[in-house]
Length: 281
Image 1 (cartoon, rainbow, N blue to C red):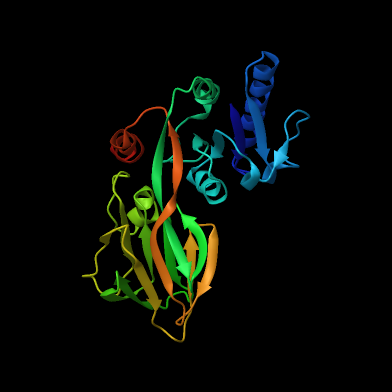
Image 2 (image 1 turned 90 degrees about the vertical axis):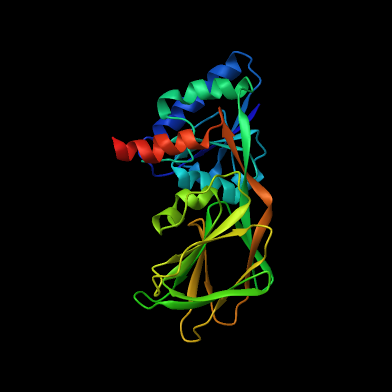
């Protein structure tokens, strides 16, 4: 079984856990277990190993990417790789993460024994003036580029005008991303089995503006209406691009999916443990 190691380069504890996992793979190979490990080359110079190679994550073909960090590390993997991903939580909340550090080696054993399932999560595909940009596993956010100055946006769905919005920005969220920025901005938590995109205004000028849930088979069109001020389009916190009044921005469901490795199903169990219980306690 082929593994790719994707640690966060700066998270406290990620480097130590990476060495622990590397030592475990050395032992597995010495015992004749049919496994291989490749390390994402963003860690070259940070990790020393004589046995395992470093390669660009885009070129690594693996059965599972082992991501050590928080939810952002998973999003990094989704941005650069089509491999299934499992998260080992070094972050604070880690809503998408499946494994705690103390259980990392046991998790590897379960993966080798094929004791897991793969959840396929929808992504948003975005075109800017006909040019494809990276898909979003969490959200596409369009923000005013001038602090304290609201921006004016016009939204169409399947060529039908929805509304004109004056706000600090708009979030277009997948169900996966509904527990992230969209939730903080007042959006609903969406079951990941839903085939929808949620549109959430950020600090809208009109209090009556509410989030809208749109079928992800629709084509969503966004236009920057203010000719004087540009906006910034951000995808999953990684890809950033300036967009202006003349730009045509189109969004719909991507043909690609994010593949999350799980040991058991249960979105609402995870919701209770990660979001509800922490507040109740």
